[in-house]
Amino acid sequence: MKAGIIGGGMIGAGWARLLRAHGHQAAVYDERPALCDGASSEAEAVAGADVVFEAVAERLEVKRAVLAAAEGAAPPGALIASASSSLLPSVMQEGMQHPERFLVIHPLHPVDLLPVIEVVPGGATAPEAVARAEALVGALGKHPVILRREVPGYVVNRLAAALWREAINLVLAGVVDVRQLDLAASRGPCLGWAVQGPFLTYQLAAPGGLRPFMEHLGPAFQAIWASLATWTEVEPADLQRLARGTEVAYGETGREAQEAVRDRLLKAVLGALTLPHT
Image 1: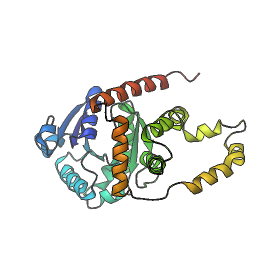
Image 2: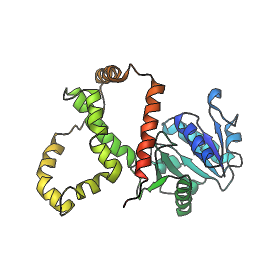
Image 3: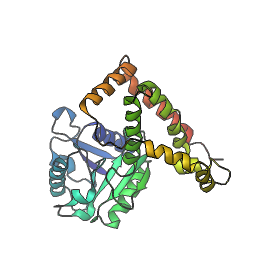
């Protein structure tokens, strides 16, 4: 299989590594020449491609322009996929000549390590395109999460956004500092959810399952829900506070060293998750 990738940033480069690791061809084009890899133009990247991955900036007008060009240059049967993390595929489909072969295939970062990839069809996406995308994700050793209905941010980023907003709120309110917040999340609910997810977590939290758990602790959760943050924008001054707090917590270690530690730990966790369930 040959893939044409438009956008050579972290996601585009991650797609290329993942595809090549599974024996596929991948040509990457980016408007920044230093990020091109195997193609010197968008048309060259998608020529003869079985699938085209768009991985450019998360702005609708930018993506629409790239998708239009890719659709015109790619072979008639090529699957066209956006790596968008939030935009509705139905909106991105507007104006396309063949919207039936377009959908979102949203990987997580780092692409070659995290095992879940979301498949999000738009209103005009053909069932055949969804089936091809699901098969492709599975063939790359990933777990496809197929959305039945499109929503902004899909599933993964909606969950992340909810936790992230409350994490920001707790730090800004002076409840906890950045490092302690990260510890509470990564070694608390996120660790458990890595193994069993939130629904199974609470299903196993009471002898009779989810229903008796919520009958017992539902009022406590209702009180917490009522007190959670509801704002939708971080003020510039608060962003500066968060940035300073994060620099204090982690600024002594360089980015490359932090990424190396992250990748090593992710591989260890993923290795444990592949153990037999019995």
